[in-house]
Image (cartoon, rainbow, N blue to C red; front, side, top):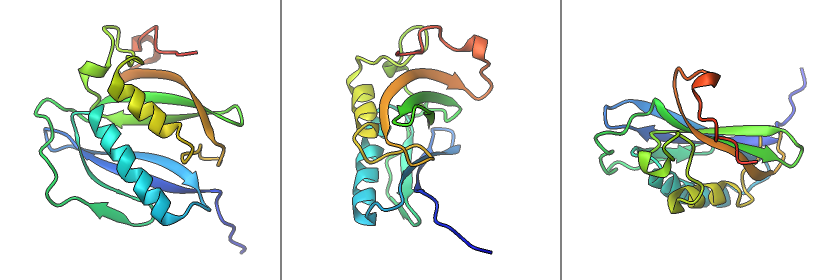
Length: 166
């Protein structure tokens, strides 16, 4: 057997909603990224992710986790099954998806699409497009292509018709 390195490392954020339910957001970074750089960026992303959810970010990590033992309580009406789905285009032309549990109604349009003029949504998208994150193939994430609200059991017909950006 010959083991080979994968092109990316997996990073994650653990979220807690107001009912005590937990969910996890996962993304990828190039395997050659320095751990200190990745952890600093994960902290910044946790801040902007928390601004678009009603959930508490409990922990984040890359091959090891950091946990906030005195995390603020999540918003009482936050629900991890209410997700903000962000679909990005990678440099290789493929798409990569990031589902963020507990998306706030304040960052959504009346149809359920993410309001791309909302400052918290802009900050979150800019953080992902900032150059550190990649698709699971290691390709750079270059643009947002869709952003919308989705529930656990949403069918394609139930999704907002204006969810696609481009």
